[in-house]
Image (cartoon, rainbow, N blue to C red; front, side, top):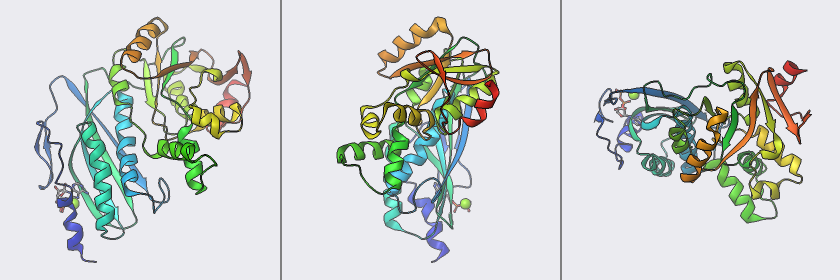
Length: 327
Ligand code: ADP
Ligand code: MG
């Protein structure tokens, strides 16, 4: 395979509908040239997806592209940033035009939805992997970090939790459960997640801390707890579960455990001072964004799960390192 084919790939990505006025020079030169609006900070995040680790080698390239970009946009959402630009480092085992076409379709579809322009990248030959760097804007000082949460703040999540893990289980088992519609819905939730950009922007100036759920609620909330120097209690009855997840799981308890441990959900977990709970709930309702109040921050260290007010000792993955701290 000629290196020339790989050199041409940069051109492959030049054709896109998003053309932002803050991009002075995009794909085609040695660097891109862009402008950050006055009064804003630049939020930057990089994530890699490696075949065999983050997606199956033969996965639909359109879905892989969606997942790659959506997970990166989710990081911007978690900071309260407005997405602007993305660059793409692509490593491909072969020059496969069909794969590239499908990949571009999935990538640009989502990029257009968020007005994100692909401004450059690199293409090399090797084991299939995708690295994206996304950049976005946040008004000076308004970024949502992990460290601002206070004892007494309410804990919220957007959307529903657990579907991604259920979808992945079905994909890995390469089966569908008896209900094909249900299987399809859960598998799609795994790949076609929606980054919570609008929610993140709405939380500027209100949330005391925020992050996106990529490793599982318990594990990720653990970051807020640690960085903010607080503890947390979670009311497991309040976990938002989809009807599909409940139908997929044999018990309510299993659905709740999946909701606590499921990574790659890309919902936001955020904390809000108690006196602003009504404000945030009506703001989110007006925007059509589902939010659930699932707990509160406490003085003790670690995370406690409460079922009808009583602590329970579930072995949820990502949970082990917190158990010891409050025993
Ligand atoms: P250089 O030798 O200067 O690194 P390249 O041949 O790698 O240049 O890339 C040429 C142009 O194509 C650059 O502007 C680069 O940003 C862009 N490019 C290369 N690969 C990609 C890609 N996968 N996605 C987006 N742009 C790319
Ligand atoms: Mg290069």
